[in-house]
Image (cartoon, rainbow, N blue to C red; front, top):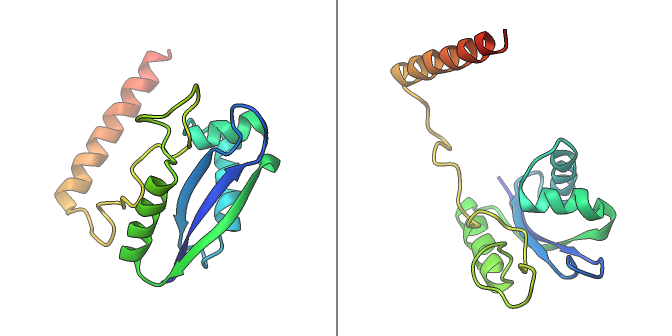
Length: 143
């Protein structure tokens, strides 16, 4: 596995100028492919701040910078977290001015806690029951 950490910046003047998003991808270490997925998510209506900004100002006003390539997921997480903090790329917390400095919503470098793990058969059955109940209630309320 290899991947990279990348930074996306907005070049549009005004409220979005200079705002950043820091991310990582293991998609053949090509951040432009990951950016294309961000654009598709934005078009599909995702409410993440970065995707909202893509819809608001247009994808053409964002450019991707390749930061670092590594074959270690541990290093990807650490580098993503470092650059997000270093560049103050979060959309929450303390910031000077009217607008937040970045688009990162979640703490960078966190990974899926289920990565490499499997649900037990009992857990899978419990999720299936909950899913069937959810859809049964949702279907009956629309009639």
